[in-house]
Length: 315
Length: 311
Image (tube, rainbow over all chains, first blue to last red; front, side, top):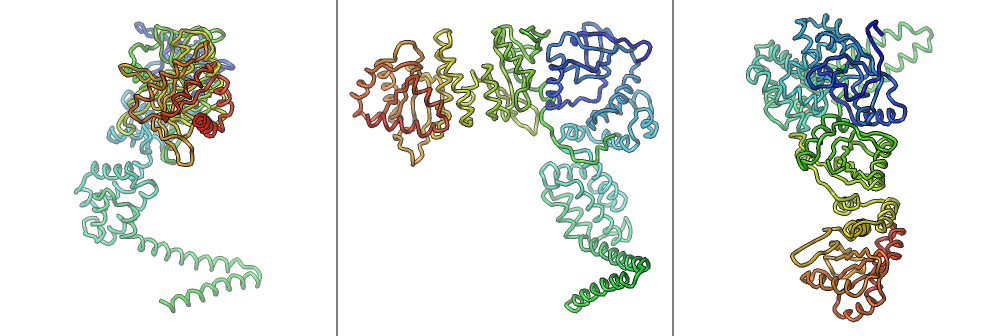
């Protein structure tokens, strides 16, 4: 505890929540466990507050311990152990929230993203490395959260309400929208980012696209189309398939993938695997120390060759 | 540190924002509910309920399965000091027999919360019931026999508690609502049905299944008499009249007494046996027997109807 911190017993009615706390989701299942625990043994870990007298509002503002405070209040506790800290300035207050909560459970993405946005507005710091340093969030997470707040508000709400996870939007951005803009700009201009996003949000909401990983197939379609077209400005036979996928609500990514590039991608993958097999054969052979080991490896590849020869005869 | 992109997120039940919306819905449906200013002092604990009325009623919003010790204790203490406890919970949570048994223990007043359009908004609609038994009956909730016994035995015992005639009448009706709601071929249609000239305690729909020996009677009427005196001929006649007035849809009735049925009732019933209507008379001992053997309720009721027809 700092020199000016005081440990006191305070009436929970004298405490109010901190507007800067990004953790605005408190699942009732976990709250219920805490309620039963506090009812049995009381509040064992003090909550942290600072004093801020404002009109008729409760005079103390929470820094840490909102769940404990809410549970104690519901249970009608008349006093709870409290650490009273000096009042922070508004930016420090927000930073406290990040640092105190970083050592505990996860925050929900959107409340954290909104808090980060507030911090950027207050400090003027936009660089993700700097933000990472002052908040304690990793640079990767900072990037993800900045992306989240760049989405239209209705999508942010969907993420916050757990209708669509943040990673769906992120994968869509990285495996479809950006590649489409770079490598099939004609299609991108035809729809614009907003309509592209809306199309795939619709597919997700209506259950046409269930799996976020599936979005990665979109990148394969775009890459092959661009290759076939000879560049971003060229025309590919697969462009119409991409356009149909965007326009047709019911069309799945898997259907588009199968109709276009699946064979090419799989054949390419197979070709690489064949080369890897040959390389592996060479490696194993070079490592073989006994005649028995060599024979085992050679026989395996001979057996494979026979089977392949049989199939080639049938083709 | 969480990487929010690693996993799909899933809804995890209810949380604070849901409770805020539920609170609003309750206050909108009954403006007498208000937020408490302070915690209430009970016997050995304190409690700050979600809502309170000036009439000494309190409301707890419950959003998880089961009832934890913290709330059970408070409900018990509140009941002991005369506070009427309402519990508002989303409909799916009322589907638990265990929850219903616990809630009935404290004689809580259930409020069912349902969302109007789950996808569009978080708007909740509340429907209040007078008791757990009424909720079970009108929502056609089927319980396990052990749960029926627990609640039923409690309700029957409560029928003998003191109170106004309305209160004691209502308690007995709660018991009968529970009893008849657990018969698989009956469905409680209405409690306390009233028209301009009649009041009927309990109206059942008879979903007679072909292998059951029951009369052709789509509507079944139940008359509840919670009196210290034996129930006599007048009650029988009244029930008969009500059955006649149902335009041919009612040939089966139950005359139920928390204590005794007078012997003269049987004689009077015999006099009208040619009219094709069956009235099963059930006194306190028989009702206790039925609830004690809740696992055989369908068979026992059928047997009583057949016996009444043969008499």
